[in-house]
Length: 100
Image (cartoon, rainbow, N blue to C red):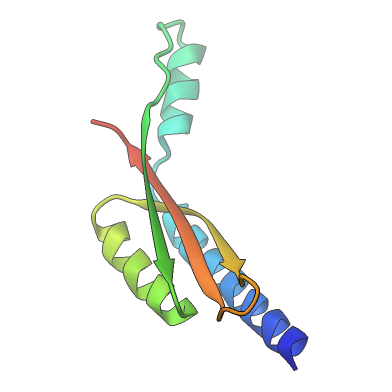
């Protein structure tokens, strides 16, 4: 039963991550702008990033927090499902945004 629950949760996290990632791809990427600057012969400046990590008990909580953070310019990078022995599942979500 525990393994079936893990598979279902993993699939849900992948779907949420894919949906958020697809929405994030609609914005222009700093990496594309950086590549264009290099193509024009300008000096390339490496992008610096801020990182943010959240830990949540449910995929729905991750999605809710991801929407809030997305409005503040954060981009979801990865979600890891962690289940320490004897503990319930927890979701660790990693976000990034360009440093100003």
